Length: 628
Image (tube, rainbow, N blue to C red; front, side, top):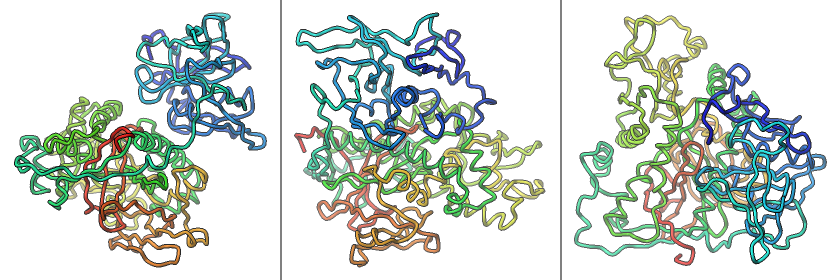
């Protein structure tokens, strides 16, 4: 990370060997060999059947070290800094659980060889934090082994990655200095029963998860224009909404919601952890044809989905989780990681609303979203011309324009295509835009499932058409949607594999894999006695916009239902965990990912128990806990 490229060892090279013969590898991904590492699966590190992590991240080394030296591992974490909150490790031999204790930097119990040293997010370890294994504790220093930092080979005879200055504080505490000025060490984590001097890491007070509603006083200037009609996304948004507003209901024009910092941190933690869990579940499904069959995806498309998943460059840009947050806890309903909506409302409009109406309470829950999208697009490697394909639906227009602003801020050149307008065939079979430029990178507003409906209609039952092998008379037939989105030389965002985590058939898989994780609802392909006795929600596996949902209580009484076009699809049954009702509205929290990490939040509200595409999006503010 901090060395010049020519000083770095090639990806996978052994940098050195730590205690217990644990090898430390270079994680210079720019030098990874695509022949040796042809797909995502090749980057998953295992010892036997024990998954240790992603090659060669810092967390992978920590888990591998603990397994090889002690026979236990810690559960999956979304970010390295989350290790500081873990309470136990799992013994591989008998599945027993042993306690972990965390000690803040400066604690009176010093680190010891074999413990984990944890850095917080920020600076050198932005977004993720960092973990290393302490190998020696000296009088004025601590030595450690680590991956994904300097990626240089150790000098001959050296048995550690770095040596960090340390000292004893006047109060008897032990302090470790971070060698990077813009990063900070949280502390260390030790497997021990002794909690003396350890941090108390308990569950949050449920009261801190409460959502509050507020109303601003009306002012004479409220009717003034507060969006910029010269900006394409603002103009498109105002055209759809009929002016500057978040809600079509003028009675809600001064309404906003607020949550405390503790609840916001929990939403961030849940979002990051769940994204990782959904990615593991996607990999699990794509390695089991019987599970994949549950997703009702045309089988001729399976090879394309595998190809899309295997291409490690084919990353998600953004997605949206839907949550219920209340004193009862925090639960995720689903992950909309293909063509998720509400980005502009979250990342821009609610902030403009607050500035215009004078809402200076706390901070906007969406103020991180736009810069996070810019980072995601910058990291996507989509530096060539990217074609934005959208329909003439008003919401798609402003959503496309907002995302285009993020692409441009990331330095990605863009062109807009409405529908399939202006597309033609090139001499070599490429699809060309109206200016004759080849279409090779695409971001679309359509959900893949919507596109598949179109593709099914276009090519009907012909398997060869799915594989793009039918001979097409290009002098008479313009490029179709299938010719763009399923073309092998076209990179599409969101990628084809996002069909898997977006499909609600993944929810029973998630519960099967993580039955005890606190954010995961009990979900099944069949209605069993446990679900029936607690109340349940029936969802079509490929439904969108809250369509064709039925909600039943524990007495099998229907609490709510919605119409739609997905009524004939297979269904899943999910544990009933109602939205909190606040001021007559059912309130759902939505969080967004960008590049796989938390990027912001908003609220959606509705008098109905089912949130749909017509539900309101209202401002969400984050305040100190004592201001709730």
